[in-house]
Structure formats: C-alpha cells, structure tokens
Image (tube, rainbow, N blue to C red):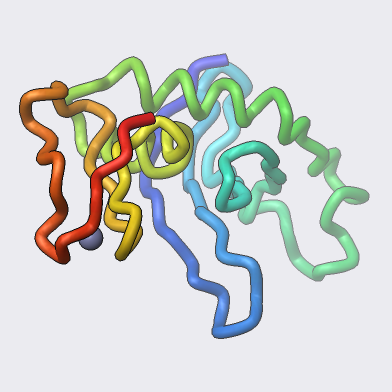
Length: 134
Ligand SMILES: [Zn+2]
C-alpha cells in the first residue's frame, strides 16, 4: 500500500455526537483516489469508503466493491503520517495516535506535543495546574 494523505480534519460532530477525524487519502498502489477514512477520537478504529464510488448511501459497502479494510488502512494511514515528521501531518499524527503520550495539565487538560523534549515542557501550566508527564 502506498498512502498519500491529502487532507485531515477534526469533526466535533455536534454537541452530543462522538468526535472523529476525517482523512482524505489516495491509495496509489490500488489506483484508488478520494478514499475517505473516519477515525475514532482515540485513534483505535477506522472506517474507509471511496467517496467517488458512492451514488446512494445504500451502495456503501455493497456496490462497485466499495469495501475497504479499515483496520488495515488505519495502520497504513498512521505509518504515512509518521514517516513524514516534518510535514504538515505530523501534528495530526500526534493528535490522533499519540494523545496518551503527551504531557498534560492536571487542571485544564492542555496537552503539549509529544515531539517536545522534557526540557521544553514546563512543570507548571499557565493556569497553575501541574503538568503530568506520561
Ligand atoms: Zn492548565
């Protein structure tokens, strides 16, 4: 699989829905473009459809072989984001897949990037809370 990430967005999903990430990508080895993955907020589950193949909602997963292994794509998307540490998707990678490894404020919940060294993360947050290292 050769994954080209094209765009990533975080969807709050209203005030009551479960938030998720949407990833638009190409699978160039399979010749599939406009693949759409939705990834749960915890980065552990993923669903994939090809938006270009969908005519009606009832066709998702039935017509035109629009059936994709979300679990396999989740791994490939993660690797594609991680391979390019200096590209625009690195922050998305840490948001989606390294959220549990980030230093976090015990009071306000603010999280610092997992890329920062220990000497770059303060021991006290601006709000006065203690910063907890993972
Ligand atoms: Zn704080």
